[in-house]
Amino acid sequence: MYDKILVPTDGSDTSEAAVEHAIDLAEKYGAEVHALYVVDTDSMSLSLGGEQLDRIEQGQFGEMDEVRERAESATGYVADRAAEHGLETVEHISAGRPHSQIDNYVESNGIDLVVMGSHGRSGVRRALLGSVTERTLRSTHAPILVVDVDRSE
Ligand code: ATP
Ligand code: MN
Picture 1 (tube, rainbow, N blue to C red):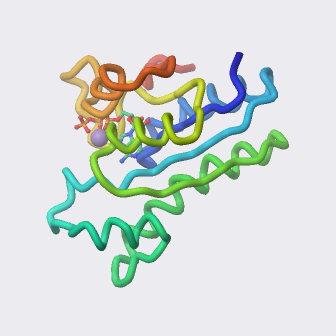
Picture 2: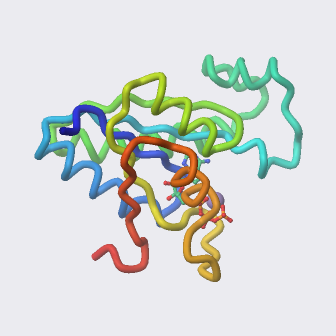
């Protein structure tokens, strides 16, 4: 049923719960784990041009060391946890609007399950769901498992 499982991560502690669910499912289904971090151009104060977005896709961050560190530690966390279970992870960093990039990734890579947190880095609990999760649920056609980060234990 599930051959490729995508965990979109913003590197927050809250998305770590989703990582555990993704890894458990990947083990049971013998699925490949994919970790995607999106450099969120909606939330960045500096506006990035198309060329810069392309460069980020190619792993060229130029002066943006902090952006690179955050991105690599987010996907690296997933890869490390997966490796502890003997699973390999495909790590990918892209740039743009997170839900659009998640959509693209699902379509381009034949992802058959997305596992993500109910909330993320901004951690505002007023909303039932974080905006990235809500938009992804609306726009992505693959099944999505949303892990309630407050009640994941
Ligand atoms: P909001 O961003 O709406 O203020 P929030 O940060 O609490 O609220 P979301 O951003 O929707 O909530 O985060 C929910 C989940 O969406 C995260 O656990 C993660 O799985 C995914 N996500 C959020 N941002 C990104 C990102 N930049 N790249 C990849 N996945 C992301
Ligand atoms: Mn967020």
